[in-house]
Length: 523
Image: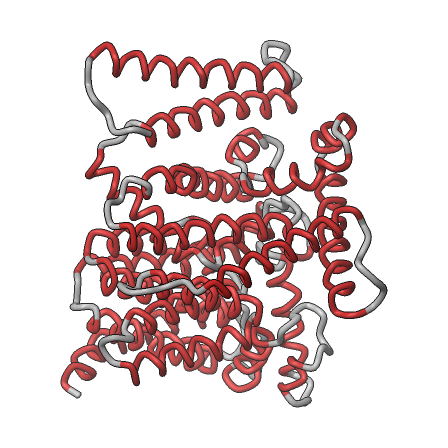
């Protein structure tokens, strides 16, 4: 009780003051808005304070949570002013939204809230913008009971920002419980500052909530040995939240964590039927994917045929959208056999958001180019660590621990491929799908950095150098597309230059190591 009162001494003024400011800046009756914003902020900050205290009142974690919340909430409010004035002239950005899904879902949430109908209609497919209904229900609940006089889009921004910040706290606590301080600090900072996570947390999107529920499930599993009753409560709560917001993510999160915890056990024996079952599933998955690519299903009707058709139509539609929206993709597709189109889409999607494209998109309005560059910087900073991860993990001496880490890496590699195929290489959709499981990607990147400090391998540095050449070459090429600069090579020539320069970097570093006579760990 004393701790709660001590926290309220600063939480109440902060929550009431921020709520009053948001109410005065927004529309509607000021005191209704003040109460609504203040209630969410006070309850959210109490939850964050409780999580912070349960993690040991670390100053580092406190700073992470403060920056995470301020960045997300501040950016969400800033978009409301910047996009109508300087964004693209569309209904979405004129209304202050950066994601079209957020705009349409938020609009429909207000429609449902003000209609007098049961809010459970959010789950009966009456509204097309939310397949699962959870976020639509949450938005309409806020509008009906906290904001009956006017539509206040910032209410969902506040909730999203709090959810994104809670994800930081749970990710930090889980990593701290399982691996200790060094990994938890890096994991927490990635979760707090990763641009894609900040952008999603500043918008009325479901991803911040999914990230929070996945991190919560991770934390619940991490505390299993310590207190099973509490662990079950956390995991049950997170599972219910995932099922309401996106059942598919619930399945993915359970699969990733179940495989990880099982491989982390000190004593385990893989029975023959488990190997046989896994092989059968892989063969079935490969067959379904092959059938989908060929455009035929094994038999007519039934669940397998339905699944194959869904995969085919989804990938074909997303590939079509990407091709229609990108002139240079159309050019590449015209010279590449059709069978290679989907692999290209997946590879291109894994690179999204592509940093050179964002840098070279000089015709974009400045808010969108700035957002694109920051998102690209974040992903291109993360990607080398994920690519180098298996090489770093291979140097671990504990075979049991190494296998558990490899499971996380394989699961994230599969998730990136699925996200890319589902998003069709789109620069908005597949990055946000990928970010849902950010906690595991952050943990992998933190482990690579930790192993790098121990082994001092040159492989990661070489990879970063090659990436820098890639960014430089293709940024120049992208810019030349807009100003028709004759001094820049065409796409094929630029790709060749990239390969040659990269090869020289790798060869030069290898020769330098041999010349200096240093024995470096094998890469």
